[in-house]
Length: 389
Image (cartoon, rainbow, N blue to C red; front, top):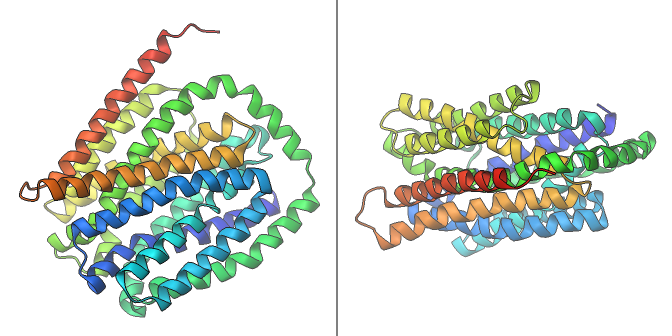
């Protein structure tokens, strides 16, 4: 690993910690400060997903056209401004505005980082994707594990000033990484282009499958996250305890990333993708209907392992199927945004239309996931019918 990539991984780790600390625990803030229930938090999550889908697509295109470094600076500047807005605006609409600003800004960061850490990877592309996944998963898991306790100690306003402080650390690290990359030269970029082009044919069928499965995994994820305050309340968990217990799926996802990085037997094997999708549905149902902490932990392990393989597949095939990694990173993130929107939107609509039906939102999302699994099998069947080159 080159020194510049090591710095980019540090930036990535910091960015994921800040993102999870703010965006995942904002739902606790809105519940305690504005009295948001399941409906309101699901609508807020759906708004975030809708903004994310569009902004990630544009963010990836911006990084590809104007450069990843400019994209990082733009993203970090916007993230800082959004946290200042969060500290300054004390109404529910003001917080929604700040959340939207944060979401747009972070979408200029993730595609750029994905391109920067994999560019020039050559035959080590699999390793670079592995390092990238492990890094952000570690940051996310640690953030969720510690955020509840830190919010109890530091107060809810730390939801804004702590990510702001982290962004202030990321800004000087970016030019450092750029200087190191210039010293390392551009030879690696030329090697990476040829290698990726050679793998286009093998990657594309699985890329399309992963681009269907990954948004659906985020349908499940972004339905679960805004419901965590309600789930933890049902199990009588404090904010700190909820952060500890409900981070289990993130640590399971981290474990999946480590395993998938070291053992690559899952590459281009449909049964692993399909099996993970089925396990994800079971884990999702188990999490939202958990009647005890033990059941919640077991369901989270299944959920985390499964979404880990699905996400890894999407990013790996995205980076392996094109030399335009900034743009493909943006499309990968945009697919995530689609899932971030669909899941909570379906849940909120179900709660609105069927308010007396227990678990209406979860049942609807479960139906969407079931339909997605059928679509995955159908798409694979069509691929198998196509003539081989």
